[in-house]
Image (tube, rainbow, N blue to C red; front, side, top):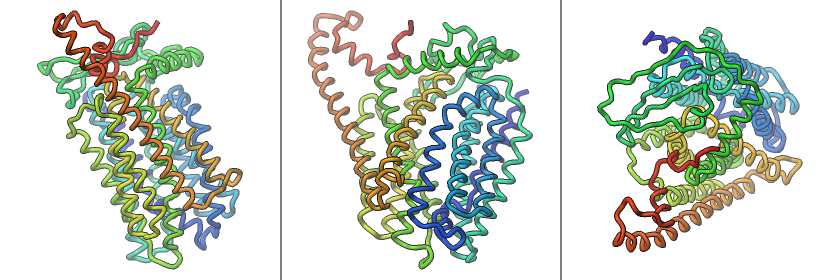
Amino acid sequence: MSEAWRYPTFLLCVYGFFSSLRPLEPFLTAYLMGPDKNLTETEVVNEIYPVWTYSYLALLFPVFLATDYLCYKPVIILQGASFVVTYIMLVKAQGLRAMQLLEFFFGVATATEVAYYSYIYSVVEPAQYQKVTAYCRGVTLLGSTVGSLAGQVLVSVAKVPLFYLCVATLVSIGLAFIAPWFLPIASRSLFFHKSDSIVLAVTEDPSKGAICVSMENLSKEKVEDNECKILLEHNIPAPVTKVPKPVVGSAGALDVLKTLWRDFLHCYSCHTLLAWSLWWALSTCGYLQVVNYTQVLWENILPSQEFMIYNGYVETVSTVLGASMAFSVSFVTISWTAWGELCLCCFTVVLAITVYLMDTVRNIWLCYASYVVFRGTYMLLITIATYQIAANLNMRRYAFVFGVNTFMALLLQTILTLIVVDSIGLGLDIFSQFLIYACYFATIAAIFLAAALRRLAVRCQAQPSSQSGSKDTDLDSLGGVSSLHDAEASLPVDDRLPPQG
């Protein structure tokens, strides 16, 4: 039983690797605007690419609920099928309407990605969560890196036409599509299908020097409403998981929606979680816009029909750097409660500067370098935000908060796309778009600079009061408002969450 996690993890890793191995992706814009599809820049930027944003947003919440209700596997198969349809159309279809339909199917594939990352937690024991998460996320990065590098080598060394990169991507997606059919069917999920008993998971949190016990899939609502994480001493024995035989619950759609609403009010009433979630939504919106349209910017600076392009190498380096920056977070020791807003401000300024340089300095090598720094910085910050949000939430609220943050990011991206990119809006050229994106990141930095200054001012005001109060009272009798504010700032996220009614 202890080795049962290996089979579904292996299949999921096979699927993740081959579905991420897409040699055409760094050259997609060049392919669409080249002789194979013969589309204009206006059609690609203002009429085709926006369809992905709209479809992703429209499908995200329904897919989130359907994934849980259908117990993951059917949605993973749907994702694989959507990828297959997307690349078959890239190979065979022609014309503007066909490419717009293709972007819709790609939106389906992107929206259903939640099933890939959440399925494994429903079929393995909690003691294996950390290990299988590392495997499943690692193989997608590996697949993306290998795909970008292979695509660039085929283009620049073997002089392979982009059409054959599209065919190679379709073959890789076809291989990936085989794996999910053999996945075991999940017997439980977070909302619609719950276990009738408590599941205890013991995992180590190296950043806090403690071991964390979380209680998942509780059938009693009163227990679900509590944040079920307890810090223990290191003398706890090896990870122990008590998993009863799952019994499918009878939660209806209305019950699930009520639970989601309670979780929303409960989680986002916490100032710290709200701040990190706000940065997540705002920055992810800008990041997606920059990544989606960077190839168009490069195509304007160095046309692929006239010069050799190196998009594949750039994507490879940026992916490796991003993964390295994300990994380096585990070695950073800083009080994010005290300095989080200031760090977000400083690094978001870096994002703004890199986008501004990409827009104003029309040099392809500087554009490439700025893009690598941009992706690496974002990966560093999003990893920190992920940890700060997830460290003190149980699995159900973890999934919900990330879903809400992603939805808000897509909503903002849709608004930005509609106004700036879409032909029914301003329909700006690519250089004007990137100038707006640079200003957008500068605005985010200004927001968090104001938040950091406000926190510093409150702390400076509270410190004298705390020092004067300590002369007349011992530690246990401190009750001033400012002292409580400082004490609250030092607590973990969930210790500051207000109790539910």
